Image: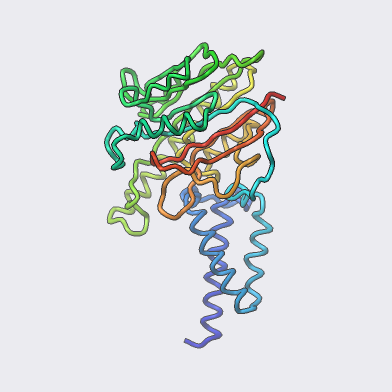
Length: 336
């Protein structure tokens, strides 16, 4: 192929991937929406960074394509990556850990047979004040004897897996949050901390129920998978809308929301939670990609801690341990 034709083809290809990236990030103001693309943001970013390096090494003008798209989507890039935070926490605040523990390896997904003890060791080391567990299985759970307050709510009535909050401070008025027709769910409880009452939510939204070998490109039943994902996106939106109606009816207490959203920060479910004037703690004090799901080489941030504006984020951390298919995240908060 003639070099000029090859160059033109690469420019068109690069422009196409940059447009897909802008659409998937929601950087075009919602005028074009393809919900499934939100899962592809990390991959599209990697492809376009390779193009950027390719053009830069050749000192060719298409390098500006990436720079222009970066300026257009600068705010959206912050949802994906945060620069290193060199600040040192100046307050002892309330420390909250959120962790999908995958039933403490109940079905032996990991070869390590003593996952519950390893998770307990991690918790003893990090010593949070509050822990919100998703996919908590009481029969496999470690004792966590240093936490005198514990509330467990199964996702379905009589179920063996659900949400659990353990705390060093009193928990009152616990309630289940059920999603109709779903095996996922959550709970809420009020926390008595110092002279304040805080509202805690611990939520697990609809799961994709796909394994790492299921992809839209390689799977034999890719169309069924695409339709399933589309359906799950819609279910997640409905669940978030239902949750928002609950919080609108409830108290004016400061809120902390720990959630396995099962979707990214570029998705509609995320946007609908954020529209309630909630703060994504990662955006305040997080670092790097903040990836929380163990998914090959792609950074997937699908676990979140949100808070209302009457709480300030002092510190945020994504803990790089592999005792579940999720990584735990933690935050330190103080009352404003």
